Amino acid sequence: MATLLSRIFGKKTVEPAPVRIDNNELDTRALKPLMEQKAPVSKDPKDLTGAWTMERVTTVFPSAQRALFQKYHVGGCSSCGFQPTDTLSTVALNHGLDVNEVIDHIQKSQEMEKDLEITPKETAELLKQGRIKLLDVRSPEEYAITNVAGSVLVDQAVAQEIMQTWSKDTPIVTMCHHGMRSLDAAAYLRGHGFVNAKSMCGGIDAWAEQIDSSLARY
Image (cartoon, rainbow, N blue to C red; front, side, top):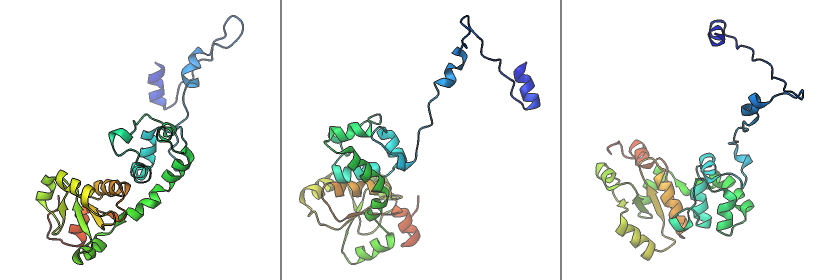
């Protein structure tokens, strides 16, 4: 009945006052669910602490995982990885790192990630001059749909060749569909000492829009 009235009049019904028990103290059992409510979890980057879970860290800082691998070699493989439920302090401790230094690095990672990126226009000019290796990190199926002339599809054999024989100062540009997988690839290469690795922002979709409109888009 009370619910029906609240729907009709648009007003909330008044809850009965807490009952007093024999010793004249308020019975707070009905209020327990309210008393146990947790404060909302902060998503403000400035509030980052070692108590944050890695799931929360990577949600608030999309660049965090790439930044951690690039500088500390954390998170790039099973032996150096972490679980979403691990706290940042735990991850830092497991890798012998100062958590405050790690926090500072993560907070700066968004800005630092810009150094990993290169525009399609810049990439096209460097490719034309033969000054870069353009690595396509999409799947073979995507590569078959459309690709940039002069690019190299990275399969297992190519990946091993890069890691084992290429000079660490080789100018490398990675690309994918929209520029996200290529960021991970560039960060991975930087983490393994390829200091001139960059990711083409916007991926092949941006290339088709800005450089070569004849390429198929998907």
